[in-house]
Image (cartoon, rainbow, N blue to C red; front, side, top):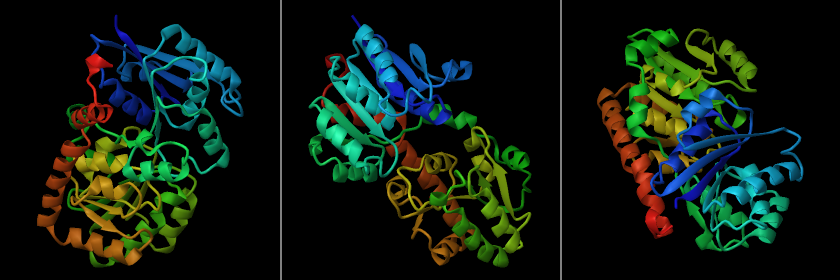
Length: 373
């Protein structure tokens, strides 16, 4: 008889569908039945089509149900677990983790994984106290980078070190590559000219992404290279402030704020270089997507970013306009370095962040094979 696996995510946004699919790929359908359950959100045909599991469930919990003690949500998930008798459960983010911590007190689940996708998730004393109260030996907490795992270790002092691991976000390289637009088509969609050198970034317009420093650095680069452009894909609370900054620096038309674009990664070939200038970043999936497009990348030496970039790109100090300016100038002036770093980036993702590598690393961490689970 096949064993049941549950992958439990907060909602069905594309990013978390990809992560659910990453975990679903671990299991042989002859031995396991994989269920993906989304805590909030109604039935979604696109999400159902995109999610790669035998069973897709939309629990459709309301905002009220997932606030406070979340008792109604806990009841729903308890009934599901009692009925299916899952052998292994993966919870993505804290709310599914909170719910499953309680469910596991009343329902036997041999293997529980709680995956955290952000820095500082366990800063709250209430969360730390709850986990110290409900933790069991069959529970493993995972960070999506070593930086997140170390952050968890520093906060969850009652959880043994062996029960805190790193499980990198991974990407299905074979499925990803065909989705990228050709460079000319991507430039056309973004309204860019073929002969422009384009720096690009894809990130929410939020303080921790620090697009303000990026714009200031680009202003210096543009003085020396008037044929350069900066494209910022994303939306968020800092948009108005960034628009004022662009206007004050007389960079209208040179810095393009596109707003949110669905599946923005497919436009990465429009860029000549990619920059993620975060002051806080658990992992940096957009960097991996840019690396698969064979772009040279610049990132801040903060949290999980150095783990992703390694020696395949440029690392600079967060918030340092001068360092970022020099890194950008170094790339624009050296086409051979651009190409070399782009090729190195592509190889690094395949080596360390592909779904194939994730499969291998996961089962080695568990120290047993599918058939013995």
